[in-house]
Image 1 (cartoon, helix red, strand yellow):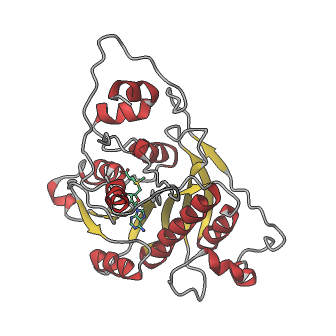
Image 2 (cartoon, protein in one colour):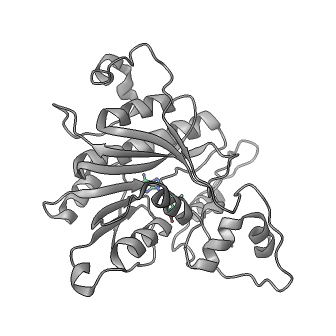
Length: 308
Ligand code: SAM
Protein backbone atom coordinates (compact mmCIF):
# COMPACT_ATOMS: atom_id res chain seq x y z
CA UNK A 1 0.00 0.00 0.00
CA UNK A 2 1.36 3.44 -0.95
CA UNK A 3 1.89 6.14 1.64
CA UNK A 4 -0.88 8.33 0.19
CA UNK A 5 -3.50 5.59 0.33
CA UNK A 6 -2.54 4.81 3.93
CA UNK A 7 -2.71 8.53 4.76
CA UNK A 8 -6.22 8.60 3.30
CA UNK A 9 -7.31 5.45 5.05
CA UNK A 10 -5.90 6.19 8.49
CA UNK A 11 -6.27 9.75 9.70
CA UNK A 12 -4.32 9.21 12.94
CA UNK A 13 -1.42 7.63 11.03
CA UNK A 14 -1.33 10.77 8.87
CA UNK A 15 -1.69 13.20 11.79
CA UNK A 16 1.08 11.40 13.69
CA UNK A 17 3.52 12.08 10.85
CA UNK A 18 2.31 15.68 10.48
CA UNK A 19 2.65 16.42 14.20
CA UNK A 20 5.94 14.60 14.76
CA UNK A 21 4.76 11.52 16.69
CA UNK A 22 6.61 8.29 16.04
CA UNK A 23 3.47 6.20 16.28
CA UNK A 24 -0.25 6.87 15.83
CA UNK A 25 -0.72 5.29 19.26
CA UNK A 26 0.60 8.55 20.78
CA UNK A 27 -2.93 9.92 20.28
CA UNK A 28 -4.35 7.22 22.56
CA UNK A 29 -2.28 8.44 25.51
CA UNK A 30 -2.91 12.09 24.60
CA UNK A 31 -6.65 11.40 24.55
CA UNK A 32 -6.45 9.55 27.87
CA UNK A 33 -4.65 12.54 29.34
CA UNK A 34 -7.27 14.87 27.89
CA UNK A 35 -10.01 12.78 29.51
CA UNK A 36 -8.47 11.88 32.88
CA UNK A 37 -5.76 14.52 33.34
CA UNK A 38 -3.27 11.72 33.97
CA UNK A 39 -0.01 13.55 33.40
CA UNK A 40 -0.43 16.92 35.10
CA UNK A 41 2.37 17.70 37.56
CA UNK A 42 3.99 14.24 37.32
CA UNK A 43 7.74 13.75 37.63
CA UNK A 44 8.15 9.93 37.76
CA UNK A 45 6.71 7.57 35.15
CA UNK A 46 7.30 4.14 33.60
CA UNK A 47 6.43 3.41 29.95
CA UNK A 48 6.33 -0.38 29.45
CA UNK A 49 6.50 -1.83 25.93
CA UNK A 50 7.48 1.60 24.71
CA UNK A 51 9.02 1.14 21.24
CA UNK A 52 9.07 2.91 18.84
CA UNK A 53 8.40 5.60 21.45
CA UNK A 54 5.13 7.44 20.73
CA UNK A 55 3.94 7.24 24.35
CA UNK A 56 7.40 8.14 25.65
CA UNK A 57 7.32 11.22 23.42
CA UNK A 58 4.01 12.20 25.03
CA UNK A 59 5.49 11.70 28.52
CA UNK A 60 8.52 13.78 27.58
CA UNK A 61 6.37 16.55 26.05
CA UNK A 62 4.13 16.77 29.12
CA UNK A 63 6.54 16.01 31.96
CA UNK A 64 10.01 17.06 30.81
CA UNK A 65 9.93 19.68 28.06
CA UNK A 66 7.77 22.31 29.80
CA UNK A 67 10.10 22.43 32.85
CA UNK A 68 13.09 24.66 33.45
CA UNK A 69 16.54 23.09 33.20
CA UNK A 70 16.76 22.89 36.98
CA UNK A 71 13.31 21.30 37.41
CA UNK A 72 14.07 18.78 34.70
CA UNK A 73 16.59 17.17 37.04
CA UNK A 74 13.78 15.76 39.16
CA UNK A 75 11.96 14.24 36.18
CA UNK A 76 12.48 10.48 35.86
CA UNK A 77 10.92 8.66 32.93
CA UNK A 78 11.94 5.12 31.99
CA UNK A 79 10.92 3.41 28.74
CA UNK A 80 11.16 -0.39 28.63
CA UNK A 81 10.97 -2.59 25.53
CA UNK A 82 12.59 -5.68 24.07
CA UNK A 83 13.15 -3.65 20.91
CA UNK A 84 15.58 -0.76 20.77
CA UNK A 85 14.30 2.75 20.05
CA UNK A 86 15.85 6.07 19.10
CA UNK A 87 16.56 8.43 22.04
CA UNK A 88 13.96 10.87 23.42
CA UNK A 89 14.82 13.88 25.59
CA UNK A 90 14.34 13.18 29.28
CA UNK A 91 13.61 9.48 28.76
CA UNK A 92 15.95 6.69 29.91
CA UNK A 93 15.71 3.45 27.96
CA UNK A 94 15.86 -0.09 29.28
CA UNK A 95 15.95 -2.90 26.74
CA UNK A 96 14.28 -5.74 28.60
CA UNK A 97 11.39 -8.20 28.74
CA UNK A 98 8.59 -6.99 31.03
CA UNK A 99 7.59 -10.55 31.94
CA UNK A 100 10.90 -11.01 33.79
CA UNK A 101 11.24 -10.20 37.48
CA UNK A 102 14.76 -8.90 36.79
CA UNK A 103 13.15 -6.09 34.74
CA UNK A 104 11.16 -4.97 37.79
CA UNK A 105 14.42 -4.94 39.74
CA UNK A 106 16.11 -2.74 37.09
CA UNK A 107 13.21 -0.28 37.21
CA UNK A 108 13.32 -0.15 41.01
CA UNK A 109 17.05 0.67 40.78
CA UNK A 110 16.32 3.46 38.32
CA UNK A 111 13.99 5.23 40.77
CA UNK A 112 16.63 5.06 43.47
CA UNK A 113 14.42 4.54 46.50
CA UNK A 114 11.48 6.58 45.20
CA UNK A 115 8.35 5.19 43.57
CA UNK A 116 6.66 5.99 40.26
CA UNK A 117 3.48 8.05 40.08
CA UNK A 118 2.38 6.47 36.80
CA UNK A 119 2.93 3.15 34.99
CA UNK A 120 1.60 2.82 31.45
CA UNK A 121 1.75 -0.16 29.13
CA UNK A 122 0.74 -0.38 25.49
CA UNK A 123 2.30 -3.82 25.14
CA UNK A 124 1.16 -6.07 22.35
CA UNK A 125 2.40 -9.56 21.59
CA UNK A 126 2.70 -10.57 17.92
CA UNK A 127 -0.83 -11.05 16.65
CA UNK A 128 -1.54 -14.56 15.30
CA UNK A 129 -5.11 -13.95 14.12
CA UNK A 130 -6.39 -16.63 16.54
CA UNK A 131 -8.58 -14.32 18.59
CA UNK A 132 -8.78 -16.31 21.84
CA UNK A 133 -5.05 -16.91 21.85
CA UNK A 134 -4.28 -13.25 21.06
CA UNK A 135 -6.60 -12.03 23.81
CA UNK A 136 -5.07 -14.49 26.28
CA UNK A 137 -1.53 -13.36 25.46
CA UNK A 138 -2.59 -9.72 25.67
CA UNK A 139 -4.12 -10.32 29.11
CA UNK A 140 -0.92 -12.04 30.28
CA UNK A 141 1.16 -9.10 29.07
CA UNK A 142 -1.10 -6.63 30.85
CA UNK A 143 -0.74 -8.64 34.06
CA UNK A 144 3.05 -8.51 33.65
CA UNK A 145 2.69 -4.73 33.52
CA UNK A 146 0.50 -4.83 36.62
CA UNK A 147 3.07 -7.04 38.39
CA UNK A 148 5.76 -4.45 37.73
CA UNK A 149 3.39 -1.73 38.95
CA UNK A 150 2.96 -3.60 42.26
CA UNK A 151 6.72 -3.28 42.82
CA UNK A 152 7.19 0.29 41.79
CA UNK A 153 3.94 2.29 41.92
CA UNK A 154 3.42 4.65 44.85
CA UNK A 155 0.26 4.49 46.97
CA UNK A 156 -2.41 6.49 45.15
CA UNK A 157 -0.58 6.07 41.80
CA UNK A 158 -2.09 5.41 38.37
CA UNK A 159 -1.80 2.50 35.93
CA UNK A 160 -3.00 2.47 32.34
CA UNK A 161 -2.75 -0.53 30.03
CA UNK A 162 -4.08 -2.07 26.86
CA UNK A 163 -6.62 -4.90 26.94
CA UNK A 164 -8.50 -6.82 24.30
CA UNK A 165 -12.12 -7.15 25.36
CA UNK A 166 -12.65 -10.91 25.20
CA UNK A 167 -13.77 -13.92 27.20
CA UNK A 168 -10.99 -13.89 29.80
CA UNK A 169 -10.86 -10.12 30.35
CA UNK A 170 -13.20 -10.15 33.36
CA UNK A 171 -10.51 -12.06 35.23
CA UNK A 172 -8.07 -9.30 34.46
CA UNK A 173 -10.55 -6.67 35.63
CA UNK A 174 -10.93 -8.51 38.93
CA UNK A 175 -7.17 -8.48 39.41
CA UNK A 176 -7.04 -4.76 38.74
CA UNK A 177 -9.84 -4.08 41.20
CA UNK A 178 -7.78 -5.72 43.94
CA UNK A 179 -5.10 -3.09 43.55
CA UNK A 180 -6.95 0.06 42.51
CA UNK A 181 -9.93 1.82 44.04
CA UNK A 182 -11.02 3.25 40.70
CA UNK A 183 -10.87 1.12 37.53
CA UNK A 184 -12.55 1.98 34.25
CA UNK A 185 -12.37 1.03 30.60
CA UNK A 186 -11.37 3.77 28.17
CA UNK A 187 -11.79 3.80 24.39
CA UNK A 188 -9.82 6.62 22.74
CA UNK A 189 -11.03 8.01 19.41
CA UNK A 190 -7.71 6.94 17.91
CA UNK A 191 -8.63 3.31 18.60
CA UNK A 192 -10.90 1.95 15.90
CA UNK A 193 -14.45 1.09 17.02
CA UNK A 194 -14.09 -2.09 15.01
CA UNK A 195 -11.15 -3.17 17.19
CA UNK A 196 -11.54 -5.08 20.46
CA UNK A 197 -8.72 -2.97 21.88
CA UNK A 198 -9.44 -0.72 24.87
CA UNK A 199 -7.46 0.65 27.80
CA UNK A 200 -7.91 0.14 31.51
CA UNK A 201 -7.36 3.34 33.45
CA UNK A 202 -6.74 2.41 37.08
CA UNK A 203 -6.39 5.10 39.73
CA UNK A 204 -5.67 5.18 43.45
CA UNK A 205 -3.29 2.26 43.79
CA UNK A 206 -3.48 0.55 47.18
CA UNK A 207 -1.43 -2.52 47.98
CA UNK A 208 -3.79 -5.20 49.34
CA UNK A 209 -2.90 -6.23 52.89
CA UNK A 210 -0.39 -9.09 52.91
CA UNK A 211 0.29 -9.00 49.17
CA UNK A 212 3.92 -9.59 48.31
CA UNK A 213 4.84 -8.30 44.82
CA UNK A 214 5.18 -11.25 42.45
CA UNK A 215 4.45 -12.22 38.87
CA UNK A 216 0.67 -12.21 38.45
CA UNK A 217 -0.76 -14.47 35.75
CA UNK A 218 -4.18 -15.66 34.65
CA UNK A 219 -3.32 -19.08 36.13
CA UNK A 220 -3.57 -17.44 39.52
CA UNK A 221 -7.31 -17.56 39.02
CA UNK A 222 -7.25 -21.29 39.46
CA UNK A 223 -7.71 -20.28 43.10
CA UNK A 224 -10.67 -17.94 42.73
CA UNK A 225 -11.36 -17.80 46.47
CA UNK A 226 -7.88 -16.24 46.90
CA UNK A 227 -8.39 -13.85 44.04
CA UNK A 228 -11.74 -12.67 45.26
CA UNK A 229 -10.86 -12.32 48.93
CA UNK A 230 -10.86 -8.56 48.88
CA UNK A 231 -13.69 -8.02 46.46
CA UNK A 232 -16.98 -8.37 48.26
CA UNK A 233 -20.00 -9.51 46.33
CA UNK A 234 -18.04 -10.62 43.25
CA UNK A 235 -17.93 -14.36 44.00
CA UNK A 236 -20.98 -15.34 41.96
CA UNK A 237 -20.27 -13.04 39.08
CA UNK A 238 -18.39 -14.39 36.13
CA UNK A 239 -18.65 -11.25 34.03
CA UNK A 240 -17.36 -7.95 35.35
CA UNK A 241 -18.56 -4.76 33.72
CA UNK A 242 -16.29 -1.79 34.25
CA UNK A 243 -17.50 1.78 33.86
CA UNK A 244 -16.87 2.64 30.21
CA UNK A 245 -15.48 6.03 29.22
CA UNK A 246 -15.33 7.08 25.58
CA UNK A 247 -13.56 9.96 23.88
CA UNK A 248 -14.85 12.20 21.14
CA UNK A 249 -12.89 14.17 18.61
CA UNK A 250 -13.38 15.53 15.11
CA UNK A 251 -11.81 12.47 13.50
CA UNK A 252 -13.09 8.93 13.22
CA UNK A 253 -10.43 6.20 13.19
CA UNK A 254 -12.75 3.94 11.17
CA UNK A 255 -13.31 6.39 8.30
CA UNK A 256 -11.23 7.09 5.21
CA UNK A 257 -10.58 10.76 4.46
CA UNK A 258 -10.01 12.30 1.05
CA UNK A 259 -6.69 14.09 0.69
CA UNK A 260 -6.43 17.64 -0.69
CA UNK A 261 -5.20 17.84 -4.28
CA UNK A 262 -1.98 19.53 -3.15
CA UNK A 263 -1.46 17.10 -0.27
CA UNK A 264 2.11 15.88 0.11
CA UNK A 265 2.87 12.76 2.12
CA UNK A 266 5.25 12.99 5.06
CA UNK A 267 7.99 10.52 5.83
CA UNK A 268 7.84 8.48 9.02
CA UNK A 269 9.04 10.50 12.01
CA UNK A 270 11.31 7.71 13.17
CA UNK A 271 11.64 4.31 11.56
CA UNK A 272 11.80 1.45 14.10
CA UNK A 273 15.42 0.56 14.88
CA UNK A 274 14.56 -3.09 15.00
CA UNK A 275 11.29 -4.47 13.69
CA UNK A 276 10.00 -7.68 15.22
CA UNK A 277 8.72 -8.94 11.87
CA UNK A 278 12.25 -8.81 10.39
CA UNK A 279 13.43 -11.38 12.93
CA UNK A 280 10.52 -13.66 12.01
CA UNK A 281 11.26 -13.26 8.29
CA UNK A 282 14.90 -14.18 8.90
CA UNK A 283 13.89 -17.25 10.91
CA UNK A 284 11.31 -18.45 8.37
CA UNK A 285 13.83 -18.09 5.53
CA UNK A 286 15.86 -20.89 7.06
CA UNK A 287 12.86 -23.22 7.43
CA UNK A 288 11.37 -25.27 4.59
CA UNK A 289 7.76 -24.19 5.11
CA UNK A 290 6.04 -26.39 2.47
CA UNK A 291 2.36 -26.70 3.39
CA UNK A 292 2.35 -26.39 7.15
CA UNK A 293 3.05 -22.85 8.10
CA UNK A 294 1.58 -20.16 10.24
CA UNK A 295 1.67 -16.43 9.74
CA UNK A 296 2.79 -13.91 12.31
CA UNK A 297 1.27 -10.53 11.48
CA UNK A 298 3.20 -7.51 12.67
CA UNK A 299 0.73 -4.80 13.59
CA UNK A 300 2.27 -2.27 11.25
CA UNK A 301 -0.68 0.08 11.50
CA UNK A 302 0.33 1.05 15.00
CA UNK A 303 3.59 2.66 13.92
CA UNK A 304 3.90 5.69 11.75
CA UNK A 305 6.99 4.19 10.16
CA UNK A 306 6.47 2.53 6.81
CA UNK A 307 7.42 -1.12 6.74
CA UNK A 308 9.70 -1.66 3.77
N1 SAM B 1 3.29 2.59 22.91
C1 SAM B 1 4.24 2.40 21.82
C2 SAM B 1 4.37 3.70 21.07
O1 SAM B 1 3.55 4.59 21.28
O2 SAM B 1 5.30 3.83 20.27
C3 SAM B 1 3.82 1.28 20.89
C4 SAM B 1 3.95 -0.07 21.52
S1 SAM B 1 3.85 -1.37 20.36
C5 SAM B 1 2.14 -1.40 20.00
C6 SAM B 1 4.01 -2.79 21.34
C7 SAM B 1 5.42 -3.03 21.87
O3 SAM B 1 5.34 -4.05 22.86
C8 SAM B 1 6.44 -3.52 20.85
O4 SAM B 1 7.48 -2.58 20.71
C9 SAM B 1 7.00 -4.82 21.47
O5 SAM B 1 8.40 -4.97 21.33
C10 SAM B 1 6.63 -4.62 22.93
N2 SAM B 1 6.59 -5.85 23.72
C11 SAM B 1 5.80 -6.94 23.51
N3 SAM B 1 6.05 -7.87 24.45
C12 SAM B 1 7.00 -7.34 25.28
C13 SAM B 1 7.66 -7.82 26.43
N4 SAM B 1 7.40 -9.04 26.94
N5 SAM B 1 8.59 -7.04 27.04
C14 SAM B 1 8.88 -5.82 26.53
N6 SAM B 1 8.28 -5.31 25.43
C15 SAM B 1 7.36 -6.07 24.81
